[in-house]
Length: 270
Image (cartoon, rainbow, N blue to C red; front, side):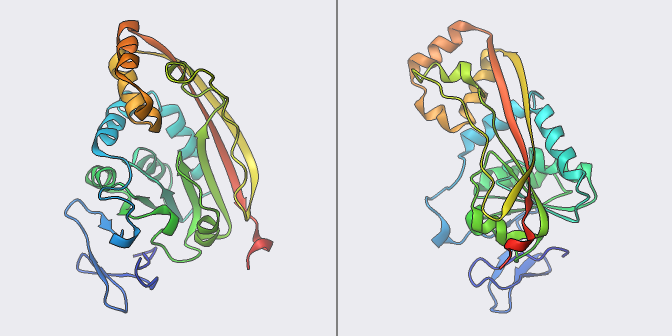
């Protein structure tokens, strides 16, 4: 295995033996039939089923198959490929929509990790060109200095963990909401919609380049419903909001994303 997983219980390297990952302390983790490994100990779970639930996963799968986020997928994959990496970790990989595109765009060993078992199970069944694991990205199951490129698509950033995982001079590629991402939909639930701002450089990294990608698209109600359901603010939609949206019919929606590239600051390594 080119990039050893790290035992989530004792932080020792895991080695693969007949589809079972084991560390020197004899902690073992079976590879699921779909091809992923579950490296999320009970003590790291914040709920019975952490991460995105099945409804969110299914909605995201349905929406992403429409191709509306392909321009972001392509931009991220090409940004990673330009780094000519050997090892890539996609932190918060979800169903692998971006992870497998990255693997297709370069010759690197690509790893996806997400706390949602439903999402990782789907990804592993469909994308054999990547390695997937269930784990917390705040305590990612990889050894120190594992990755040439770290990727984060709409996922929380944990500065210390990013610095730990990054090789010297490693690249971090982050996709985050642009100024008016989904503003038309947010107006249904918020009186005032505030513009998103670019994310700040995580500690130990410096900004190299930042690109704003934007498109306006017209969506039928079924796609709007899936788009909302796959986002955290779906919980704020009440029955009357859904009714208004359905009566509206087609909805013009702004898709807006910052794609930020950061570099590990070598002289900050301790």
